[in-house]
Image 1 (cartoon, helix red, strand yellow):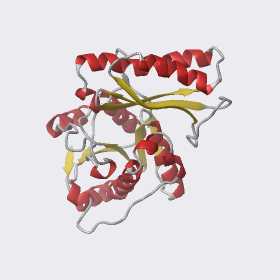
Image 2 (cartoon, rainbow, N blue to C red):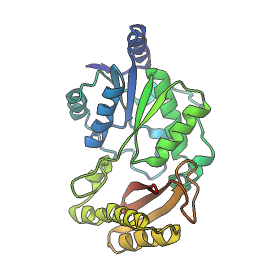
Image 3 (spheres, rainbow, N blue to C red):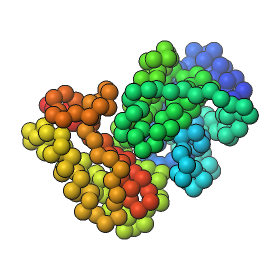
Image 4 (cartoon, one colour):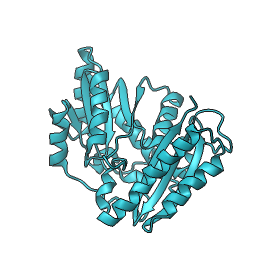
Length: 282
């Protein structure tokens, strides 16, 4: 497995692979890998010949007071996990390699980033789209895999790829959950045992809303109230947002008539967790 630290080396590796006609698939990560990431890598292996995993904790997508410095890191462990699923290359640049002195270019996707996480994290997605565009340019993939757990990020990247005419297939990967239902996240390690118990209210609320939806409820506010009450009942939770949105635009819907997504962000203690569930009428 190749470990690459510079953009120049990454360009050379990708060009050599593409020159032999191989299909290259990228899985972008911030490291501290878990089974959710590994599931995306396995999907990547199914869709291409060469699997590149990027590991880069991107400072541009963290706002003031967020957990950039504290974000968990364990590169030695990450290398072993990527190797365990047959990864061919890890691209792990440092911040200066990605953002050299005098850096002043950003990529902005406008309307779809104004909703959900974009409300309370106004510069987050500019950091995401900028770094993903740079990773695409560095690795030259035919396809890239993004998890559905961050549903808004997935839709933003799809929009950017369409708008900027990238010849890259974006492949979604389903949410992977712990046996107790908690969506896998590197930030789960921040939770105390009591907080983790409270965090289970997120998935319970989403599954309950799905049951109500499947039983015929279509009023978004009533479904949101169900989730809000369940999460509020836990002492360690503070809701950032609970929304039901159209899947393509992420605009709020009042009555669900087409495919929709319930997306939520909740602070459990000081840890901000996100989760979602897609509501599709049979």
